[in-house]
Structures are given as structure tokens and as C-alpha cells.
Image (tube, rainbow, N blue to C red; front, side):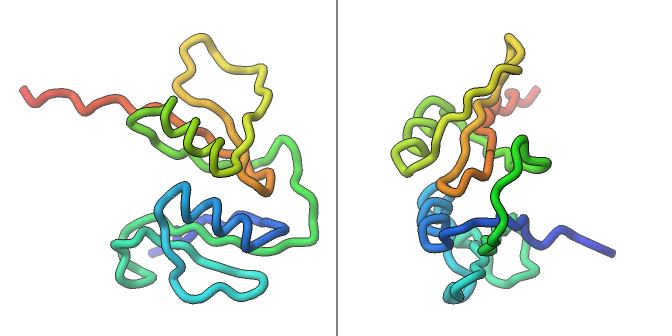
Length: 128
């Protein structure tokens, strides 16, 4: 059986990107970063195969492609507050013309130009 282990984002400045994603998600280094690779895990994740999404950063010499073919969806209970916090960490707003009227997401990009959506989560419905 296969499972997804990590989502890998390519970056040019691994230190800057690592700082951004650690602060954005509250993740920690699985092991000390190398010059071209780091895997970030949720702080509760005790082993590489434990549940919880991991994010890996890999240095590349290639420029970002626009529009990118893959992006992250980051869920937020308070989308406006999280967007403000992420912008303060170095994220940038993306000028996106294709939002539908009822969009529950906002497109941002990290310090390396990797795009991600901040999605407003809905409260869980009350039990019957």
C-alpha cells in the first residue's frame, strides 16, 4: 500500500523558506537541515511514518512556473487573522482574477513564490 509521505516545495533560499513555513505552520525540523533539504513535521509527530502531513523543502536551480501545477490548501478557523499573520511573516498576496463570488479561499505565495490557499473552514455542525 502506498501513502503520501511529504509534500515537497522547491525553493531557492532554504533558510528563508524554512523560517517561513516553521512560523506559518508551527512545524519543527525532523532532523537538522542540510544545505539543500529539510523536512518539517507537526510537533506532535513522533516518527516519519506517524500520521500528520509533512512538508519538505528542496533547493532547486529552476525558476518557479506560473501558474503552478500544484499548491497547498491551508485551513484556517479565522481566515482574515491568519492571512494578516502570514503576510507579516513574508507571504505575498497573489493578484488572482478568477475568484468566484462565494470563494472561501485566498491565494498567497510564500517567500519563494510557492502558492498556497488559505481556506476558511466551517465550524463543525452541532451534533443532533
